[in-house]
Length: 239
Image (tube, rainbow, N blue to C red; front, top):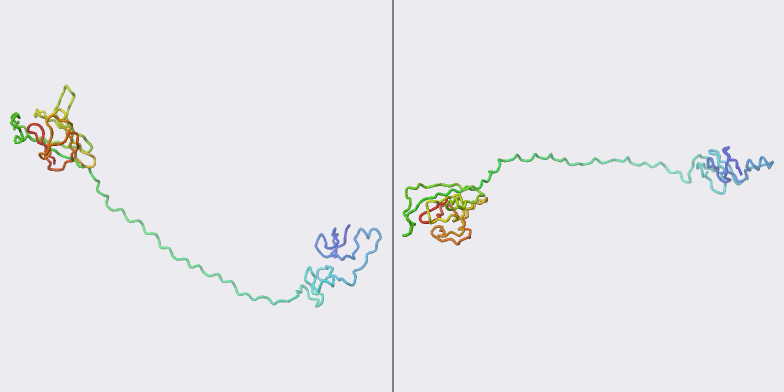
Protein backbone atom coordinates (compact mmCIF):
# COMPACT_ATOMS: atom_id res chain seq x y z
CA UNK A 1 0.00 0.00 0.00
CA UNK A 2 1.32 3.48 -0.89
CA UNK A 3 0.94 6.38 1.57
CA UNK A 4 1.15 10.10 0.85
CA UNK A 5 3.96 11.99 2.58
CA UNK A 6 3.12 15.58 3.71
CA UNK A 7 6.05 16.69 1.54
CA UNK A 8 4.61 15.04 -1.52
CA UNK A 9 6.50 11.77 -1.48
CA UNK A 10 4.98 8.35 -2.03
CA UNK A 11 5.88 6.26 1.02
CA UNK A 12 5.63 2.52 1.49
CA UNK A 13 5.53 3.04 5.29
CA UNK A 14 2.43 4.31 7.02
CA UNK A 15 4.08 6.06 10.00
CA UNK A 16 7.20 7.80 8.56
CA UNK A 17 8.01 8.61 4.98
CA UNK A 18 10.33 5.99 3.53
CA UNK A 19 11.91 8.75 1.36
CA UNK A 20 12.49 11.71 3.72
CA UNK A 21 11.51 10.35 7.13
CA UNK A 22 8.69 12.85 7.73
CA UNK A 23 5.90 11.58 10.03
CA UNK A 24 2.79 10.60 8.09
CA UNK A 25 -0.66 11.31 9.54
CA UNK A 26 -2.48 8.06 10.09
CA UNK A 27 -5.68 9.71 8.78
CA UNK A 28 -4.14 10.37 5.35
CA UNK A 29 -5.54 7.89 2.88
CA UNK A 30 -3.08 6.23 0.48
CA UNK A 31 -3.06 7.04 -3.17
CA UNK A 32 -4.19 3.50 -3.82
CA UNK A 33 -7.37 4.07 -1.79
CA UNK A 34 -7.94 7.35 -3.55
CA UNK A 35 -7.80 5.63 -6.90
CA UNK A 36 -10.42 3.21 -5.61
CA UNK A 37 -12.84 6.08 -4.91
CA UNK A 38 -12.38 6.26 -1.15
CA UNK A 39 -12.35 9.87 0.01
CA UNK A 40 -9.53 10.90 2.29
CA UNK A 41 -10.30 12.49 5.61
CA UNK A 42 -8.67 15.58 6.94
CA UNK A 43 -6.37 15.63 9.88
CA UNK A 44 -8.08 15.22 13.22
CA UNK A 45 -8.03 17.95 15.81
CA UNK A 46 -5.42 15.97 17.81
CA UNK A 47 -2.65 16.63 15.25
CA UNK A 48 -1.20 19.49 13.25
CA UNK A 49 1.46 20.06 10.61
CA UNK A 50 4.75 21.69 11.55
CA UNK A 51 4.96 25.06 9.74
CA UNK A 52 8.75 24.64 9.35
CA UNK A 53 9.15 21.11 8.03
CA UNK A 54 5.58 19.99 7.39
CA UNK A 55 5.81 17.02 9.69
CA UNK A 56 2.50 15.90 11.19
CA UNK A 57 2.76 16.47 14.94
CA UNK A 58 0.54 14.84 17.55
CA UNK A 59 -0.43 17.41 20.17
CA UNK A 60 -0.31 14.77 22.86
CA UNK A 61 3.38 14.15 22.13
CA UNK A 62 4.50 17.58 23.36
CA UNK A 63 4.95 21.09 22.13
CA UNK A 64 8.08 20.52 20.01
CA UNK A 65 8.32 19.07 16.54
CA UNK A 66 10.34 15.87 16.79
CA UNK A 67 11.95 16.52 13.42
CA UNK A 68 13.06 20.18 13.45
CA UNK A 69 12.32 21.22 17.05
CA UNK A 70 9.62 23.87 16.17
CA UNK A 71 7.85 25.16 19.31
CA UNK A 72 4.11 24.90 18.66
CA UNK A 73 3.23 27.01 21.74
CA UNK A 74 5.53 29.99 21.04
CA UNK A 75 5.82 29.55 17.28
CA UNK A 76 9.58 29.72 17.53
CA UNK A 77 11.48 27.69 14.99
CA UNK A 78 13.93 25.14 16.33
CA UNK A 79 12.98 25.75 19.93
CA UNK A 80 14.25 23.40 22.61
CA UNK A 81 12.68 22.53 25.96
CA UNK A 82 15.31 24.70 27.57
CA UNK A 83 16.93 27.55 25.61
CA UNK A 84 20.47 27.46 26.88
CA UNK A 85 22.76 30.47 26.37
CA UNK A 86 25.82 29.82 24.25
CA UNK A 87 28.73 28.53 26.25
CA UNK A 88 31.62 30.97 26.49
CA UNK A 89 34.48 28.49 26.40
CA UNK A 90 37.99 29.80 26.81
CA UNK A 91 40.28 29.27 23.86
CA UNK A 92 42.39 26.15 23.94
CA UNK A 93 45.99 27.04 24.61
CA UNK A 94 48.57 24.47 23.58
CA UNK A 95 51.62 24.86 25.78
CA UNK A 96 54.93 25.04 24.05
CA UNK A 97 57.06 21.95 24.28
CA UNK A 98 60.12 22.45 26.41
CA UNK A 99 62.53 20.24 24.47
CA UNK A 100 65.99 20.25 26.02
CA UNK A 101 68.84 21.08 23.76
CA UNK A 102 70.97 18.06 23.00
CA UNK A 103 74.63 18.88 23.00
CA UNK A 104 76.43 17.65 19.91
CA UNK A 105 78.48 14.58 20.37
CA UNK A 106 82.13 15.31 20.77
CA UNK A 107 84.36 13.58 18.26
CA UNK A 108 86.23 10.56 19.51
CA UNK A 109 89.69 11.31 20.78
CA UNK A 110 92.40 11.09 18.23
CA UNK A 111 94.35 7.91 18.24
CA UNK A 112 97.50 8.15 20.28
CA UNK A 113 100.85 6.88 19.18
CA UNK A 114 100.77 3.21 18.26
CA UNK A 115 101.76 0.76 20.94
CA UNK A 116 105.22 -0.58 20.50
CA UNK A 117 105.30 -3.96 18.86
CA UNK A 118 106.42 -6.64 21.26
CA UNK A 119 109.27 -8.44 19.60
CA UNK A 120 110.25 -11.95 20.60
CA UNK A 121 113.57 -12.42 22.31
CA UNK A 122 116.48 -13.52 20.18
CA UNK A 123 118.97 -15.38 22.32
CA UNK A 124 122.70 -15.40 21.68
CA UNK A 125 125.03 -18.13 22.92
CA UNK A 126 128.82 -18.21 22.89
CA UNK A 127 130.69 -21.54 22.62
CA UNK A 128 134.17 -21.43 24.16
CA UNK A 129 136.92 -23.86 25.17
CA UNK A 130 137.61 -23.94 28.93
CA UNK A 131 140.55 -26.23 29.83
CA UNK A 132 139.80 -25.79 33.55
CA UNK A 133 136.80 -28.09 33.35
CA UNK A 134 138.72 -30.94 31.71
CA UNK A 135 139.21 -34.13 33.71
CA UNK A 136 142.48 -36.07 34.10
CA UNK A 137 141.38 -38.45 31.35
CA UNK A 138 140.49 -35.63 28.93
CA UNK A 139 142.70 -35.05 25.88
CA UNK A 140 144.46 -31.71 25.54
CA UNK A 141 142.04 -28.86 24.87
CA UNK A 142 142.32 -27.09 21.50
CA UNK A 143 143.20 -23.74 22.99
CA UNK A 144 143.72 -22.18 19.60
CA UNK A 145 140.08 -22.69 18.66
CA UNK A 146 138.29 -19.30 18.62
CA UNK A 147 135.00 -18.65 20.35
CA UNK A 148 131.89 -19.13 18.25
CA UNK A 149 128.62 -17.24 18.54
CA UNK A 150 125.15 -18.53 17.56
CA UNK A 151 121.86 -16.60 17.41
CA UNK A 152 118.77 -18.62 18.36
CA UNK A 153 115.64 -17.32 16.64
CA UNK A 154 112.30 -17.41 18.51
CA UNK A 155 110.26 -20.55 17.88
CA UNK A 156 113.26 -22.73 16.98
CA UNK A 157 114.71 -25.90 18.48
CA UNK A 158 118.49 -26.25 18.19
CA UNK A 159 120.37 -29.51 18.53
CA UNK A 160 123.70 -29.56 20.39
CA UNK A 161 125.94 -32.44 19.24
CA UNK A 162 128.47 -33.68 16.70
CA UNK A 163 127.99 -34.13 12.98
CA UNK A 164 127.53 -37.69 11.73
CA UNK A 165 127.26 -38.21 7.99
CA UNK A 166 126.56 -41.92 8.50
CA UNK A 167 123.57 -41.16 10.73
CA UNK A 168 122.54 -38.01 8.84
CA UNK A 169 122.89 -35.85 11.95
CA UNK A 170 123.76 -32.20 11.42
CA UNK A 171 123.35 -30.22 14.70
CA UNK A 172 122.55 -26.51 14.67
CA UNK A 173 125.24 -26.11 17.34
CA UNK A 174 128.05 -28.49 16.24
CA UNK A 175 130.79 -29.38 18.77
CA UNK A 176 132.87 -31.72 16.59
CA UNK A 177 136.20 -30.97 18.35
CA UNK A 178 134.96 -32.41 21.67
CA UNK A 179 134.78 -36.21 21.49
CA UNK A 180 132.94 -36.41 24.85
CA UNK A 181 129.93 -34.71 23.24
CA UNK A 182 127.28 -37.14 21.93
CA UNK A 183 126.03 -36.81 18.34
CA UNK A 184 122.63 -36.01 19.80
CA UNK A 185 123.55 -34.50 23.14
CA UNK A 186 121.03 -31.78 24.14
CA UNK A 187 118.39 -29.41 22.82
CA UNK A 188 118.19 -25.62 23.20
CA UNK A 189 114.60 -24.47 22.56
CA UNK A 190 114.02 -20.75 21.97
CA UNK A 191 110.28 -20.51 22.62
CA UNK A 192 108.02 -17.93 21.01
CA UNK A 193 107.20 -16.39 24.40
CA UNK A 194 110.88 -15.51 24.91
CA UNK A 195 111.81 -18.39 27.19
CA UNK A 196 114.98 -20.41 26.53
CA UNK A 197 114.87 -24.04 27.68
CA UNK A 198 117.66 -26.68 27.84
CA UNK A 199 117.00 -30.43 27.75
CA UNK A 200 119.59 -33.21 27.92
CA UNK A 201 118.27 -35.90 25.56
CA UNK A 202 120.13 -38.85 27.02
CA UNK A 203 123.78 -37.96 26.37
CA UNK A 204 126.57 -40.35 27.34
CA UNK A 205 128.51 -37.92 29.54
CA UNK A 206 125.75 -35.63 30.80
CA UNK A 207 125.22 -31.85 30.91
CA UNK A 208 125.60 -29.22 33.64
CA UNK A 209 124.15 -25.75 34.22
CA UNK A 210 126.29 -23.58 36.50
CA UNK A 211 128.01 -26.74 37.80
CA UNK A 212 124.75 -28.64 38.54
CA UNK A 213 124.10 -31.95 36.74
CA UNK A 214 120.86 -32.09 34.72
CA UNK A 215 118.28 -34.87 34.86
CA UNK A 216 117.98 -36.31 31.34
CA UNK A 217 114.80 -35.49 29.37
CA UNK A 218 113.80 -32.72 31.79
CA UNK A 219 113.39 -29.09 30.72
CA UNK A 220 115.43 -26.42 32.48
CA UNK A 221 114.70 -22.72 31.84
CA UNK A 222 117.75 -20.56 31.24
CA UNK A 223 118.53 -16.94 31.87
CA UNK A 224 121.22 -14.57 30.70
CA UNK A 225 124.72 -15.32 32.05
CA UNK A 226 123.88 -19.00 32.72
CA UNK A 227 126.81 -21.30 31.83
CA UNK A 228 126.38 -24.75 30.29
CA UNK A 229 129.30 -27.17 30.51
CA UNK A 230 129.43 -30.22 28.25
CA UNK A 231 131.95 -32.84 27.03
CA UNK A 232 135.63 -32.59 28.02
CA UNK A 233 136.10 -28.82 28.10
CA UNK A 234 133.26 -27.14 26.17
CA UNK A 235 131.39 -24.24 27.82
CA UNK A 236 128.28 -22.44 26.42
CA UNK A 237 127.48 -19.02 27.86
CA UNK A 238 123.95 -17.59 27.50
CA UNK A 239 123.73 -13.91 26.48
